[in-house]
Length: 545
View 1 (cartoon, rainbow, N blue to C red):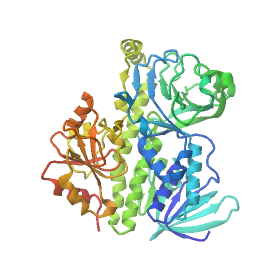
View 2 (cartoon, rainbow, N blue to C red):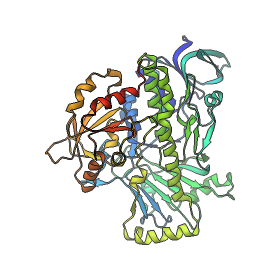
View 3 (cartoon, rainbow, N blue to C red):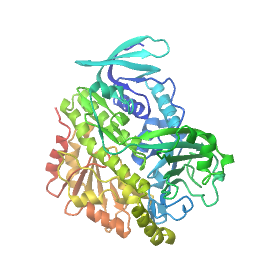
View 4 (cartoon, one colour):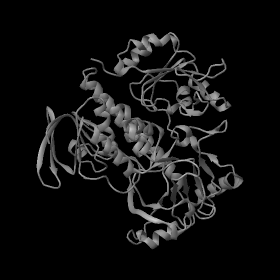
């Protein structure tokens, strides 16, 4: 090792730690990445990425992006039993707008992927990055702060130890985080822990049992009779996607289950046999997993921080755990960059938790709610489900659950009280691309601060140009299309269904500007004549020097 001093030290080199190191290096900061495993964990864990995370990963992988395999999920159905999977009583499915599935041309709402492959690609980018010193096969032993952050690490192969220092130190070291414990940060429980048997299967689509030949997506199976709620994920599309020959099952465990026996190959083949032909499958992994719903009470201590599972842990029912970690990591990276370069005061770093906690808490609770649809098999709940099934699923008219999966607009303390109607209009707002394809507004430059303008941005363009480039927001006008406008580089036109035009009306009801932070956070809403107030509010978010 040539260097012992860094701008940032990151403990934990999984997807979140690797993404953080690459983002920080792109900002020009020197990074040391410490990871106890010499090679990536060989089995899949995370499996779902949303459009926000996909955009971040595509930018970081660069020329290696074509090597990343993924398949967009087309539908997620809620069904009463494994024998009724073609009769979902509820379905999470992006809408079809003018013959095209929303966002399918651009990642899609949920995308299945292989975590080991992603980690290998991220490591390859790190190896090529001159700003990152990666110490794989090293483990953190001692951590302290004395003006700077100091950490003593051990080479797991040789036993040699070394002490490093940095201006900032980030714990990306998972649910049992060493860094979080050394910071003295306690975890708050937001719900009960749940045990599952997780099984990853390698098999061709031809292994699907008759009646189970669905497109890529997933099925939440209530199973009130057998009382084993199950998640069944199909990761290969019929005619789309590059992530193939993969299926995942998540089987709920009962109190009387023998955890060792249920993981035997014969037991697993019996469990998956209603869905796949047992003789055509290869069991890649099976493990008992405990899903927690936890959030750290303190995300910063001095210049030490935690990100990812070290900060928040969620159940898998809406597939947002890793995505949440990426959004929050980007928030922290941007703040460290501004403070380290003298653009912002140190107190900006306190806003990391202020801005990210509401979104994180909401996602964890939303996942628990969706899990409740799967796990509650009490007689009166089953009776209600049966009625809904007869009225909806059996008639081919499942309840639309897509809005329940779409993250709600988040507001934060010290924000500027955006109007409720605007908050309701943002999540389901859809626009047309220049090619005429439907996209959700959530996917439009989601990593940037944005000013959404009703019809015209002319009154704010000049004011925005005066803002320092490092914090300059993106300005875009939105139109309902009635004036003949077409989507261009500076203007987006909403889709033309009645529900889309209503979202446009909600977003701009009584306002002319909507100020957005990265992700789903709405900072404020403003009217004509309040342009200078809006820019002043925006600048106050950055605690400028």
